[in-house]
Image 1 (tube, rainbow, N blue to C red):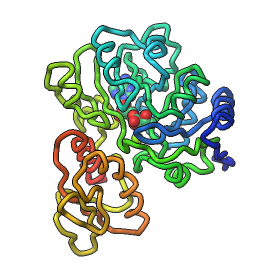
Image 2 (image 1 turned 90 degrees about the vertical axis):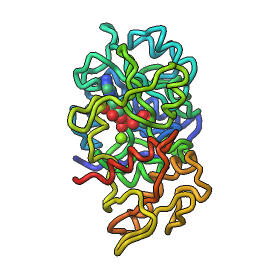
Image 3 (image 1 turned 180 degrees about the vertical axis):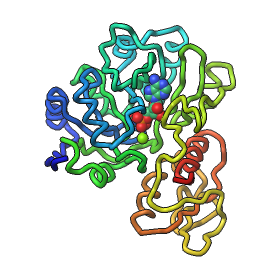
Length: 315
Ligand code: TXA
Ligand code: MG
């Protein structure tokens, strides 16, 4: 692939206008959401979506999330339901993706759905993402803005570290507040938790009045982000560590201090926001193995442990 001069766009009205022009020309714009940076392109244009896959080096069986500005815009692309409405009214905009039946007249490129009859839709809360989606007035396919299989970016510098020269532009917003990807809820039509993420599953369970089954498995992934070896740093990773072994650096949490900590006070929100940045930083120091302190399996801890298990998986 020939090198592009990746444009750094300011996080203001001028930057958004330029981003929209890039998108209209079927180009790619990395932009901040409250979870992680997304690599956006027009979800209706096959050539634009193909550009996402080629920049990421992503296996093409992995379907993408379509980002929209609000519920009305989501309804252009998916078959809405009372259940979808209850969940969306409660949690959108926010770190939640809904998988719903694709409308026959949606006009979404089959490269986005990877040929499935469902579409993943999400309304991000980040003000710059909102501004971009409203100005573009169309669906943006946007996986995390990192080379496939690598750690998701939570600051624009991570995006550039992986994709500088491979994409047209980056909207240079600040750090992402949530720090792990959105929770994915399947509603086609039975509620299934397809990926733990930035919205604690307990919040969905409280609203729906059911305990959510985690759908799919590494062998038969329902959300192909469930592929076991995903989110991988260069270093190896060991979980539930209380001290560093030979050749390891220790990433702490709560009482386990570590060489660096996800949250000294044991706060799971702080830990989620710090997770990918810490893995990037320790990886950059050339650590052979990153040992990570035990993280409780509740709330955002479920999303953190899910990402850690994938990073720890043999590759
Ligand atoms: O927080 C996020 O969700 C970020 C930001 C940028 O919005 N995006 C993100 O996208 O994580 P991506 O492409 O890295 O993850 C999309 C996940 C994958 O696990 C994919 O398999 C799943 O969504 N997915 C997409 N469409 C699906 C569908 N129709 N059925 C089941 N899973 C689907
Ligand atoms: Mg990703």
